[in-house]
Image (cartoon, rainbow, N blue to C red; front, side, top):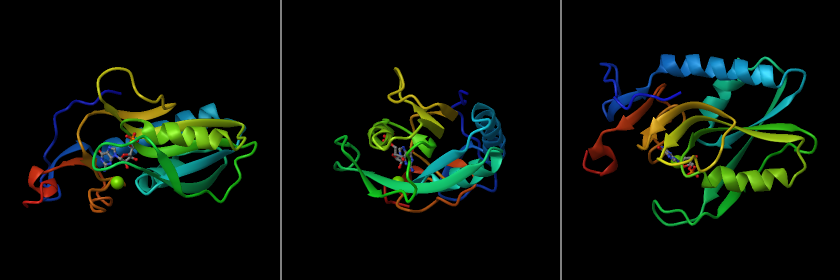
Length: 193
Ligand code: 5GP
Ligand code: MG
């Protein structure tokens, strides 16, 4: 689903937010659709939902409740090495799962797919643990031009290549609790607000 790049500016917007890219209503509707699609695809099977901390938490909580087949839930955290905005590509699991993956149908749930480095590295690590299957569900995929760097099996929205916050996504650990996906006002991330 391709989103228009135009932001909306509802009066109720957080003062640090320049505009809303995906509204609360659009999120709820798309999460329901994804949940229905996943439930059809996994009919008769149990899914192990693996949330990617911390950004994936909000999406995971909503998506889990939109899925009608049996699920287990676990989480991991991953960090990529690399200074500033350029990542070296090395990804390390900083908090591991409690569940064994052996023989399980694993569905990894994350909020945003950007360069794909995180999920590509995770994929290798998870497949080495003997799961029956591994698939990926991301709420947002950034349109960086060219072919997607990592193929997610379920994608909520394709968004323009802008830094977004809300619905689990932070800037300096803030804004995760916004109920929509928005773009910050420039002074906020340039430190002049
Ligand atoms: P990738 O490895 O695909 O480049 O990046 C994925 C991770 O980078 C996400 O899990 C998220 O932590 C971070 N990220 C990428 N784009 C954004 C963004 O627009 N906003 C926020 N808050 N985090 C982002
Ligand atoms: Mg972050």
